[in-house]
Image 1 (tube, rainbow, N blue to C red):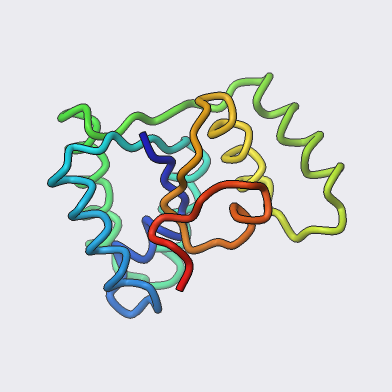
Image 2 (image 1 turned 180 degrees about the vertical axis):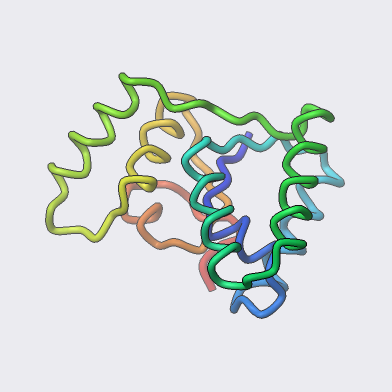
Amino acid sequence: MIFVDSSAWIAVMLKREQHHSRAAKAFESFLSKGTPLVTTDYVLSETYTFIRHRTKDFAKILRFDEIVAEAEKEKFLIVRWTDKKVFQEARRLLLKYSDQMFSFVDCVSFITARELKLKEVFTFDRDFHTMGFQMVPAAG
């Protein structure tokens, strides 16, 4: 199982993003191999918001929503919902690492991935590397 960060979702969805080609290839590889993916409600929220504000194209929001819904239906994607415990742990982590520029969503993701004992994260955000996760595809 691989955790999916918003940077990966965004790169998959937006062709003008720097990492689009690598993200699309990785996503297709996960699909073809049947690699299960997991993300959080916070990551999805961040992705919907980014796509909406970056593109102003509601069709892209609808397409992203279709991809997420289909992936969940096919049991290819699990969405973990953030509860009070995860929220509080993420808050603690954010405050602990004041020397880093982690977002709160990143902290929720770190906590969630650790709870699931995941080592790999589909991301282009080096903060995951800083926290000891393996970035997939490898940073390049």
